[in-house]
Amino acid sequence: MSDDARCAGNDGVDATEQRAAVRERYAGEATDAGGCCGSDADEAALERGYSREDVDAVEAGANLGLSCGNPTAIAGLREGETVLDLGSGGGFDCFLAAREVGPEGRVIGVDMTPEMVERARENAADSDADNVEFRLGEIEHLPVADAAVDVVVSNCVVNLSPDKPRVFREAFRALRPGGRLAISDVVLTADLPDAYRGDPDAVAACVAGASTIDALEAMLADAGFEAVDVEPEEDSETFVREWDDERDPSEYVVAATIEAEKPPA
Image (cartoon, rainbow, N blue to C red):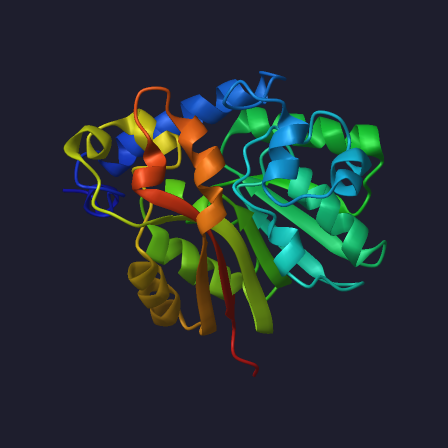
């Protein structure tokens, strides 16, 4: 069995199948201006923690309505910092981060879907965002140098990975000493039924790949992080229910904020 297969995100879907399902789904999202779940992307963002100012400030087409929170709101970004966004999609969080770090700062978005990277680069060109760049790559193998960034953010993407411990080790490697992690994602609150575990579409829909709070805390600690804090957002049930027309995923997952720090040198 390959290393990827052993790192399967759940018992029913191996890593190769999981990555293919995720890539196919989000390639479709990148070319569909309607965003996810059939809902208006701006309204979805407002429901998930963004302000009207955030929504209005970013280039049209960057917000695809795929968030489960607002990581830039918890990241405490400062002028001049370098920010890395794992699974940057159309670039929504990258462009918001760029406003916070200013012209002396820098934002790097990484996404494994070529269609997403192409869309994000077009959005960057349209918005004249000179301090934002987008790179094609997997979050388990970040195309970023060691100790190159001050902050790592991500929005409902880590759960999609078949090898989450490696994602956190890569984030730790990319962070400078004293750097911090600020993620919005989903956490598992109850055992998944077999119908979810064996469904690649349920992985791609941010349900079947979710981990428990205890598991995430252990992964982060094993990667070297300190001050680990995983906080579920109970009021997220309203929008989590919309992720599946046939079942109610809020019975098993809720959105959460995930914060941690790399120890100073």
